Amino acid sequence: MTQTQERTRTFTWSDPAAGAAHLGRLSGLELMRAMIAGELAAPPIMHLIDMSRMEAEEGRVAVELLPQEFHYNPLGTVHGGVISTLLDTAAACAVHTTLPAGIGYTSLDLSVKFLRPVTVDTGLLRCEGTVLQRGRRTALAEARLTDPAGRLVAHATSTCLIFPLP
Image (cartoon, rainbow, N blue to C red; front, top):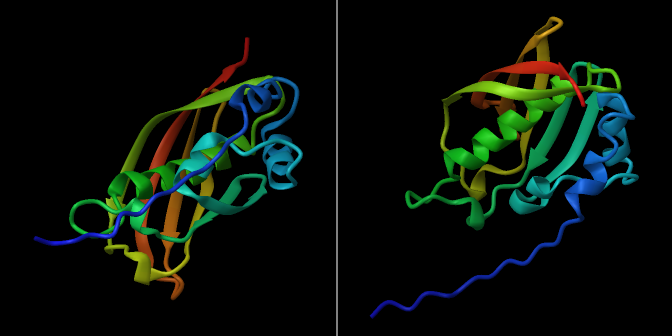
């Protein structure tokens, strides 16, 4: 009989409605900068997958993630959904940084290419999203996930729908 060591993880998060209440009153860049400064709580997804260190400027967002065992799939590598979440976050938040107060967005699609396997030995991942083109109704963004050596691990493009908030 094989013995395995059980591992546990506990995390906490703040009420996401508190941050969402600022959506119509702050520009996207102001909202991102308030989260980075700790004035607004990060969304629960950042705590769920343990994303860290966010940077934001108009049209660009970067986030980091240190791969952990709890990110693994049955193959012993980081699950593609975790990688896709990083890519979606960086690309969509980059679009958000270009939006004025009172304007919202949602992802319409996300096209991902996985280029290298990721494990706990990979080291700190950096995901940078940039806006490629923004119009009145849609925006196109890309995100690049790189390892500590600067090698491209995964790439995504995303289209976001832009709309006035109620």
